[in-house]
Length: 170
Image (cartoon, rainbow, N blue to C red; front, side):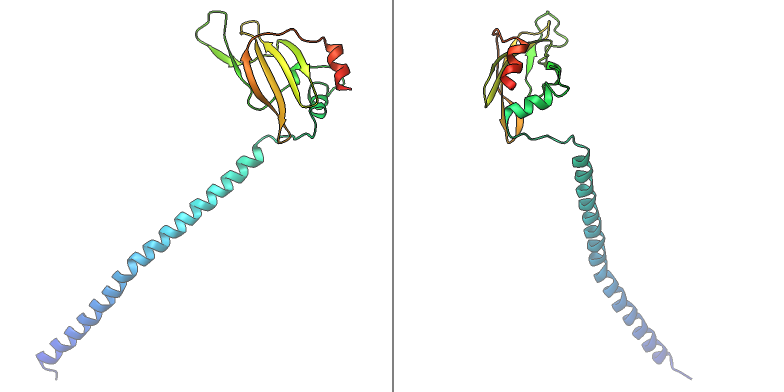
């Protein structure tokens, strides 16, 4: 039969081994947590990349042109008939509302009253604005192949008639 001291020594040894095991488990906890955090962080980064890819895929494709004439033929003349409402450009300006309605003070320049003032190989100048807007003169150019408003100012200039504009595009 075993003595009380032997039993106590065995129990002390078991407790010591259990404590060492617990210490090793406790030492592993930060590593395990860090691993889970790293995995969650990695998953979040993957989801962000996936989100950006979906966002880019849904973004309307920007058509790039080599010449201004090519761009205008593909937009305002794309049906074979002149349509000023097809004219769009990056950096489109807003114009003040001049009918006294303070609820909508600035809106994108409307092409309702549109005059093509000048067309060269590199730029198009247009005076435009809706009936409720102050007229705005816009200068458009190709920037990296994209039609872009490079300058705008309030004002008005007489422009050419549609037939004259069409001739310049030929």
